[in-house]
Amino acid sequence: MRVLGLLKGRWRIFALTTNADRADAIRSAGAVPLIGNLDQPETLGRLAGLADAVLHLAPPPATGTTDPRTANLLHAIGRKGRVARIVYASTTGVYGDCGGAVFDETRAVKPATDRARRRVDAEARLRWHGRATCACVTILRIPGIYAVDREGGHPRERLQRGTAVLRAEDDVYTNHVHADDLARACVAALVRGLPQRIVHASDDTELRMGDYFDLAADLCGLPRPPRISRDEAAQRLPPTLMSFMSESRRLSNRRLKRELRLKLRYPTVREGLAGT
Image (cartoon, rainbow, N blue to C red; front, side, top):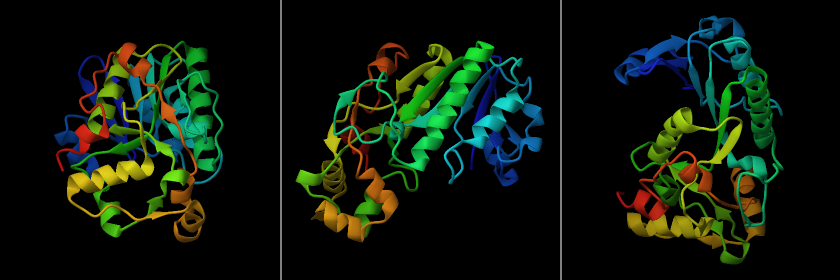
């Protein structure tokens, strides 16, 4: 389900979904469902003038180098609308491979995949909209999201499949955030985000990918994954997974803590995975 959160006043929340069958679940969560599709601009007419703030969580399409969904959303909101704040959930993939360097949000983007290029396009559109309308746009660049209680959100499934990881000399640094901390970061950005600001929504973990899966295996009581060389991985693993194994970076989250004043409930993956 692609969801767009809209806030009006203090308490009223709207959620945009393409699936009418999700309406009851959205109501149960305390929001008002709106049926619409960011791929179909004609379905978005109700968004104009509806909200004071927008939480934009919808991913770009699966192909191409641009994000027409974000373009359609901004057109629906309108340049002279009432929206004063926009928070966008982007990805740290926009940086490409950084060789394991530690860096903050001032680093230039260097996307290496079309998936990341689509996010760069969305970010540029949103920042232009913010400058043109004086809306406060905050872009959260998000790393790998995990959650122990959500399907597909825990490394347990991959460990049970026995998927290999890179040997230590070929391994890459990865970054993480617990889903609950990410949700709190989104709310904090809606309240305290600075204009045209980028924030790393990442925890304090500094682990290579293989070490992360070793830790998860130990906590779950499962065998550690096999280690293979990069050349072996290129032959055995799917291209999408290899793309993640080709980018290494360590993110500073100082803005998250100082500007959004977010205190992480799960500062590292050890705390976050401990409830398995």
